[in-house]
Length: 282
Image 1 (cartoon, rainbow, N blue to C red):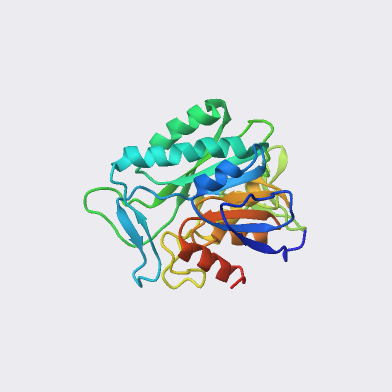
Image 2 (image 1 turned 90 degrees about the horizontal axis):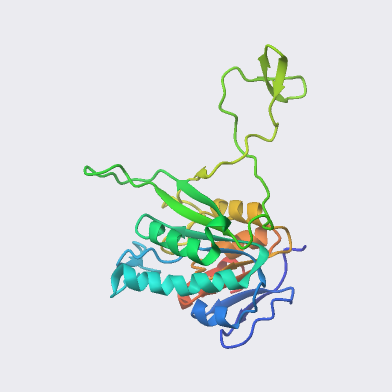
């Protein structure tokens, strides 16, 4: 599948024909978009919604910001997100999966809602994204992780591609003449997969530093490597990946890099402008 699939900026009031081999950027409320999508039409959904921080999320340079303040507090935030989670379930194919990126403020509440909507039997993983950044506390352990809840639309029918990365952490590892890793045991050589160990549900991926070339200045931008890992694991080339809180467009970039189609929606005009710039559309 070629990477030069056209990207269309579309009005949320218009229907989106997902059968077309096009990528879609949509400026508008994702709920309005979700209400127009047919059932079982998406292969994968990754969302990184607001975290209910009760603040305005702004980069220090002030170029980009979005409000994350909820007058009704956590209850209002949960109502906002739950209705969208219900639509995520409706629009996913039976082979599809949902990944919801959250932090300590709401993840346990959203887990209960997802169990209700998707069914406990369709829970797949609680992925821990671990990272190291500045800032420590004298009152608690440093909070250096976020959580990604993963659910299948239909467990057993969902797509999953195991990923192998990194190095085996074992003593006494040797390599044969072909470079294959092994350990010597009483029964002879015990070989390990040359592609490395299979990933677990704890992911150590660096947070984007202030000097990273990837950083756009948009608040809470996630690393491309993080989203690409999800897309590689839970979809195949040519599938449609959706992000209904698109932010700076990282999911769209990752999908395009991996030969997937994307549907990216955000209510913030600055986010869509930035996504178009990253995609080379503006």
